[in-house]
Image (spheres, chains in turn red, yellow):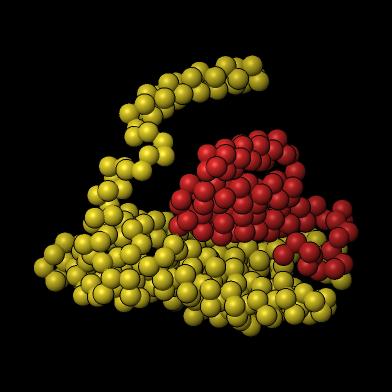
Length: 94
Length: 250
């Protein structure tokens, strides 16, 4: 039973990591990275490393994608006059 | 360099790494066995210092010096980000506006923020007993505060976030880790030796210096990450380049 769980979690990590590499748009990549972080947290949990799973969950699936999204938002606003999504104050990305 | 040369260089490097990695892994203990040479020694050492969570004992007692390095890395990161992301002379400051939020989102954030803060403090305080500790609880504390941004707006988050105080707390917590280490030296032992009374096994006060160091790391990680995110959020929400203010402000 446990072997199957480890195998499934490992397969998910490999698939989502490959997907993260193949995704070209940084904003989408942040979402895929978040899924990868979640998969890694599950993998660490089934490998009986709950301490690492907690860190991974907090940093890998919440903090890193947030920092990437904030950086993308700042950088993509550079070319002036091309971005019309500013009217809402950009609440949806925070 | 052409794509073909790059591919050949990658394959050569990958082959070398694969060879050495396989050779190193062949000497490891087999995967998933009940007894493990390092685990047996670590559990015995943790029990000797009456720390229920062996991982916390390894991180904050047996190899606390490694954790001091890790903690300094985070402190340096926050310091570097603060320096790099400070407001430049040509950047315009646009005050964040009050924003409307869906009532359900507001309710969700208002209910969840205090619960998440308590969970964060719990994880920091019980690091020596159960999975968790200063790093994990600190990140939970830092992200909990940002529920205010999700549930209300950036102004609400700024009111909840005394940055000057957090910067001081970050530095003091980072320094106190070293001070606890020096206390071991003063008490006649070695740097970062566990010199405090060990307490009763499986109680919140057990483990000697482990809960103290956990608290220091918890405060440092929480305030450091809030400061780090604050600089990123300021850049993304409030600071605009001079040439884009016609389109940026509404």
